Length: 108
Image (cartoon, rainbow, N blue to C red; front, side):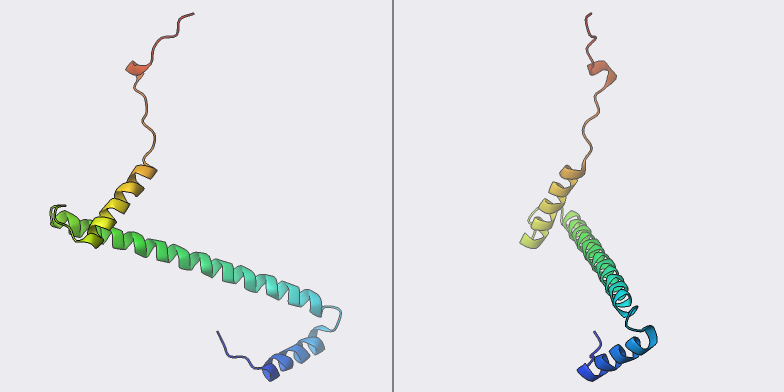
């Protein structure tokens, strides 16, 4: 973040007061604060999304290494990644679709 001192901030405030006037300055400040918050939340979302994608990529790499080792005698960090991937895979699997033959005819 830029290093803005008190004098620079005061100068920006005085210029804004002269340009906008005392009646429009509070609304402009609120709009600016709203915009800055929106930008920050957007960047925070992007940062978390990129972090999640990097984590998924790392898990896939660990799974690939585990498959190369034959899934036996894995180092603890690879075994933890494999277990985590298995748990994630089970949590996102869709529910089983019943077969048409499994349905029992309803008696009226």
